[in-house]
Length: 221
Image 1 (tube, rainbow, N blue to C red):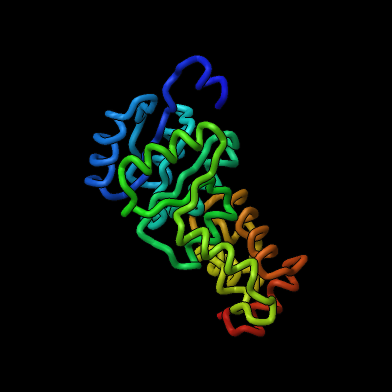
Image 2 (tube, helix red, strand yellow):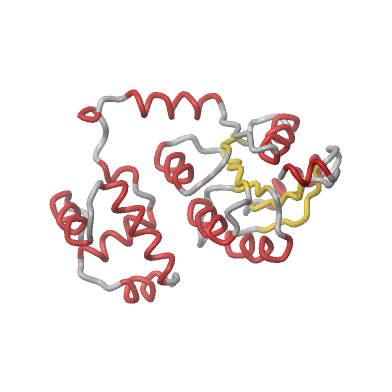
C-alpha cells in the first residue's frame, strides 16, 4: 500500500453490495474523491471474488447480508486469495452474530451505512495506509466483549454464523467434508474453513468434541 501512495496511484476500490442503488450512490460519491478509483461493482459474493481476481483491488467495501455467499464467507474467501487486500465492512447491522464472525474472518474496518461519505472515503484512505477504522459502537462492543467475564458470556455457539451452524449440524450427523460440501453447494476448502472456525468458536479440538457439543446443546437435528 505504501508503494501505491508513493507512486501517486489511486486506491483501487471494489464495491460488493446486493442493493444497486447503494452501489450507484457509493460509486458516484467515491469517484469525486481524490486518490480513490472505483474499479468494479458486484451484487453478490461470487461476483465480488471474480471481479477481485480481475481488478486486484486494494480495498473492498463489503456488505454483510447477501443471497448465496454472505459477506462473512466472501471476506474469508477473498482474503484467502488476496491476503493484502483490505476489506471494509459497510453494513446496516450491528448485532453480534454478524459483527464478530466478519472480524474473525479478517475484515479490516467496520462502518455503518449511516456513515457520511467523507467518513467512508477517509476509511478507504486509512486502509491504504494500513490503519483500521471501527464505527464507535463497534469499538465499544469489542471492548465490552473482551471485558466480559467468561462465565457471563452467552453460549459459545451463539457466535456461529448461519452457515457454520449448518456445517456443525452435519458434522454432528457424521457427514464427511465432501458430503457437507455437496449438500451445501460449496467447496471442500470452504467446508474446512468453516470447521476450523467452528472449532475455534466452540473451543474444541476435533470433530468428535464438536459433535458432542452440538448434541448437548440440542442443535444436531
